[in-house]
Image (cartoon, rainbow, N blue to C red; front, top):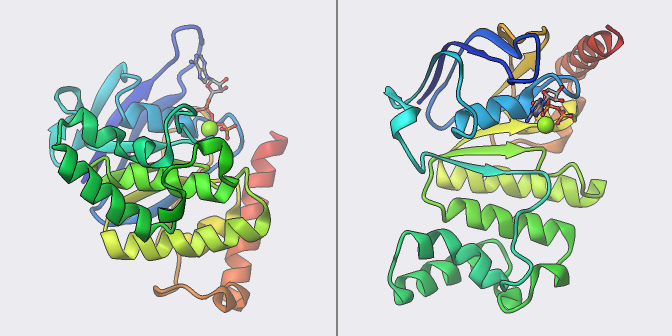
Length: 250
Ligand SMILES: Nc1ncnc2c1ncn2[C@@H]1O[C@H](COP(=O)(O)OP(=O)(O)OP(=O)(O)O)[C@@H](O)[C@H]1O
Ligand SMILES: [Mg+2]
């Protein structure tokens, strides 16, 4: 579905490349997490995918087509929600549909279904400031789902939440993913979160980024918390943490 082919990228003001000849694939319906030390270029990869940045060399393809000529193929959800404070929750999640010029009746119907699905129906007339952090992230996710894109770029969406809210949102996200069959790329600093959620983890282990180290998670879906205690999973987690810490020292 998504293909990086020998992508090289450098920020104008930098001397060295951030990405060098990076190639990787993402298949339709996959849930992949990307982990790597702070500042290694993870969000930059997302900005290249959504076309906010353009590579100096190489190609980025979506369903075999260069993304240069495409729009609305991916939806980006950052750590801090991008809900508009002056719009109600219902109006916030309806935004993409308004831009797509859907009819008022259609927008209302889809917004209602989605608000019920994410458990925010009673909050539809509230403003973002009236919601908890977890609720705001659910509202952001509802908006992302209604954008009509099939590739979701989630950039540390749960990192600002307390640990209990985070755990319930992780489970909630997996249920939504299994239901909607979207393709998810998920950036996180939290190795346990990456293991619990993903089918595969891409580790950024070099600079400039020339490749991702790939780890498959040997757990079936639906995921269970108890599985995180399995000895092979604990070992994998320790190995990934060690790997990331070594890089942090360099
Ligand atoms: N617009 C920009 N212009 C120049 N350099 C930038 C720009 N945005 C980011 N950088 C630099 O590029 C590097 C990678 O940034 P990026 O945001 O991709 O890292 P990251 O892996 O997402 O980090 P974090 O885990 O802290 O979010 C950083 O050193 C950053 O300072
Ligand atoms: Mg980042």
